[in-house]
Length: 471
Image (cartoon, one colour):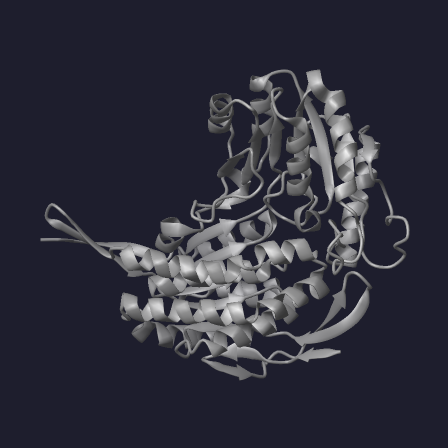
């Protein structure tokens, strides 16, 4: 059993002041696989102090110095990809197809930031005014357990490029991934205090970081409820915020779509990461004129989403992360039936042959209206709904009738029609005839899916402040 009893402060592995031990389980077996000693308020304060000291010199480093650091980070993360993949499979049940496809995005974040930095101009003159983009100060980076390594790399890469020092608070549920990732940071020879990592609870360490007067910026990925609390904590000191929050993404299947490929893509999006992805397409909007065909296409495509051991390359859906999440998802499956929706596939309980592990039957409801709770609330598990529409206008209205607005998808054989619909969908990102976005595009949400953007120049400038000097 693993014992993780160190955090990373001021360039060193140290024993935290906090003493609480948090258990780590393998969600595929429900077995206890380790314990992590959690940081507390004292550790969080020490991490901010270390980052503040390091900011004095790091904020003055040259582009070439930061590019060199980013290149070393990319190489260091690349060297640990196999270890990180194994940890993701064991620690939260990510299937091999996901880790093999998405985890290389982590070193890619450092590569992209280095490339952007080469051409980015920190000083521009317009008329009699010079605008200098200055690093904000200390940033708190708070990340969830799902794709934890990618989210940390994404935010830290932008901070390093901007000349900002960071305190990272990853989820306690991802402590094994965090340990390997911290070792990768340490191996990259980053100046002491530039990156500090404190694993702890959100209501302890998170509260300190998001209210601390010496923290200028918070970059957060997680639930909408947690994002609301962060905004409240940050208000007194007017912190800059980038919040990438929950979603209830629509996948619009227009009546001219190739249903076989579109439905397969819709299920891939909805069941991605075992249904535990904020940008998943969990509402499938289907033309009423082809609803029976959509149902048939779904039933045919479900064979590709085998539930089971995430180590098995044939597995399409692994377990959810915890007993708590399993119980939550089961409650929504019961709720959907109580609301009058019809089960097209799946249902309550574990899949046949899986007596242990927090495995959920991939479940799809039909006969759903957009006012049902299963259509409005983020479930965060492999549960999708099919909602019929009459025409493009109704599809757009249903898609936009949600408190969320993170990512949406449109499938059509007519590019102009797809563009016309996509432009009217209220979401930070709309994908046309594809499942995965462009890593060079800005990513983030509107409405209750967050504020601000990640990636490319938008992500970099989220860690910078314009300083106007007029002569």
